[in-house]
Amino acid sequence: MTMILEKSWVKRLLALVLTFLIVQVLVSTNIINTYFQATIATICINIILGVSLNLITGFTGQFSLGHAGFMSIGAYTCAIITLRMSNTFGFLLGVALGAVFAAIVGFLVGLPTLRLRGDYLAIATLGMSEIIRIIFLNMEITNGAAGLSDIPRFVNWTWLYVFTVGTLLLIKNFLNSSHGRACIAIREDEIAAETMGINITKYKVISFMIGAFCAGIAGALYASYFYFLKPDLFGFLKSIDVLVIVVLGGLGSISGSVLAAILLALISTALQAFPELRMVFYALLLIIIMLFRPQGLMGSKELSIKYFKNLGKSLISKKGGA
Amino acid sequence: MEQFLQQVINGLSLGSIYALIALGYTMVYGIIKLINFAHGDVYMIGAYVGYFCMTTFKLGFLPSLLISMITCTVLGVLIEKIAYKPLRNSTRIAVLITAIGMSLFLEYTMMFFVKANVRTYPPMSGLLAQSHKLGDIVITTKQLLIFTVTIILMVLLQFIVKKTRIGKSMRAVALDRDAAQLMGINVDTTISFTFAVGSALAGAAGILVGVYYNSINPLMGVLPGLKAFVAAVFGGIGVIPGAMIGGYLIGIIEVLVSGYGNSMYRDAVVFAILIIILIVKPTGILGINTREKV
Image (tube, rainbow over all chains, first blue to last red; front, side, top):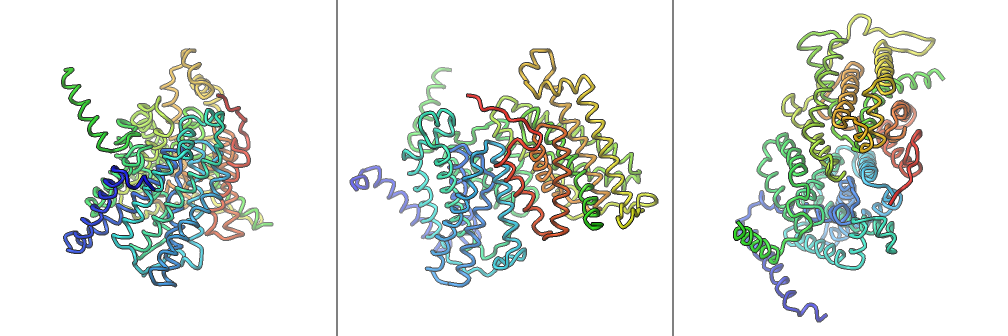
């Protein structure tokens, strides 16, 4: 408990509370109108999705194309529960169960498929998320292709912020633990990691489950904020959306994913009127990043005050050298 | 029994399409270890080129087929030169993401130009509109056309790969790129040629699908592309006869599932097959096991 009293922790806590309060005041005074509130919700949901996929793909090195599948499990669970139990308890239960179900499916899918490498895993997870989508398309309780509508809205800025910060803390702390280090070791070299006594399958599955868990939360928030769900929302394209966030931000950088989620949500809001151009833009962005900056915006670095200091120093020394 | 045979015949026509697309996947994977996600969209463009040849320019089937194959060849080589060649030495994940980007780019650029709505191929006339009866089984001329074109193209492909000089270098590069380069094989040309051949086959598949099913749209390549990839994995990725067998098997399974089971689940079944194969025998039916090396 002494950790909490440390100076840096107090600073971080203050920064978190301040961010929350500022946006809260802006929302309640209606300076941020409903339209931008929706953008903020998208940003928060995308941050959760991006960071959790980054855990799987960026930190553990397992290329997954099935994030939309996990998201849809969380979304449908939360929607079905809140439609029957329309109160805050029902909403929280929906989020919790949605996340747990997604994690369970993550476990069931991950255990056999995570033995596969690279491209094969990508295709297997893609197949998995397509199967989940088709099952939702054919189930009675999900109302098939027509989807669920009039889902009660419980998500507001407070819940969005709590869940986003919660996810960030969960993943950050996981990565700083010995388990997280084991995952990074697997990314760097699977065979070497195995030789050092790391149980590869166990850690791959753990990271996959945590990723699925967070995607479930994101899905639940999505369902509760946007009223309406249909299986087509969670197709291949949704997984690609998340992948773009992770790749643009940098595989292996949490702050990169956060930055990319914010940037892409703003761009996508600006291009709302031209849905086709938006996708062309996305596609070009993917290709151009890969051709010219394959490590993404941040590479595997994290954004911090120290980072800016180092950046400044290196810029100054470069100028001095020239 | 008649119903079963009828289903198998329908399955074989669908399977021919998958086999043609799967060949492109498997050759490209064999040579540069890349799942070319854009391949399904090359097939889509082939279908559109065929459509415009037949409607706007009022060409017959064969000239349209040739034009669409040539266009796709050029497109495939261009994609390779622009998007994949600069990444020859980067990580596989980077190339894979580029391929996904290329696929989205083709889909939505096409959607921007031709709009998202479904277009229908002109109805076939004369011989192409007929159907033939063999006992109780009905075979349409369109189906015969698909079989004939597919078989001719496959024989041609086998000839190129097995008997010609460029085919020999394709096999050499697939086996060991560095060694092939040391033997004086121009690796870049060989890879471009592989893309050219694969894309030509996809173009042919596109126009055949247009003729067979009549309707095309800019996103038509996504699902068949994925299924053809499943077919390639099923038969053993990197093995050319494997892609043909896999394509036909996936086609027949899909038709049987929709014929006897629930057609809503036919895509799910294909992906379930994929996951099962990957777990049980990742090298596929004709694949050879390779040992993991440190």
